[in-house]
Amino acid sequence: MKLVGLILLLGLIPVYFLEAALKVSMWSMEMMIHNSIRFFAGFLVLGIGVFYEHVIRLKTALLIVLMLVGADYISDYLRGINTHKLEFAILGVYMLSWGSVTGYVFIKQIKKYSQMP
Image 1 (cartoon, rainbow, N blue to C red):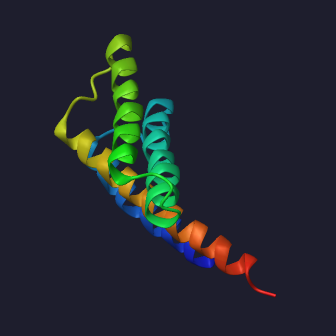
Image 2 (image 1 turned 90 degrees about the vertical axis):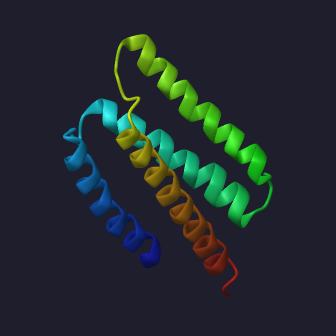
Image 3 (image 1 turned 180 degrees about the horizontal axis):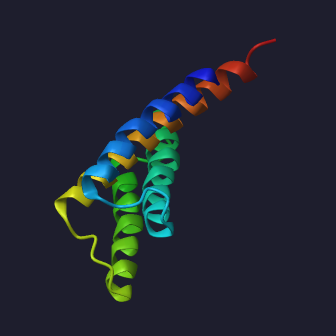
C-alpha cells in the first residue's frame, strides 16, 4: 500500500501546478467535484474494470467515462459555469489517467496481499 500512497502523493504535484497555471483554487468545491469525478471514473472504470479485471471492454469503458464527464459539463453549462477550455480538458485527461494508474496499482496490491498466507 506504500506504492499507492506514493502514487497519490506524486500525483498531487502536477495537479497543484496545473491548477496554479489555470488560476483556479484547488480547494474550491467546484474543482473538487470536477477532479473527483474524473479521478474516480479513471480509478474504477479504467484502472480496475478495464486494465486489471478485464470485465469491461475499453470501448464500453470510454463510453461510460464520456457519459460521466459529459454529464458534468452539461451540469456546468446549465449552472452558467464556463469550463469548456483546452486547459480544463488537459486537467481532466490528467485526472483520468492518474486515477486509472492508481486504481490499477491499488487493486494489484489488494490481490497480492490477499493471496499471501
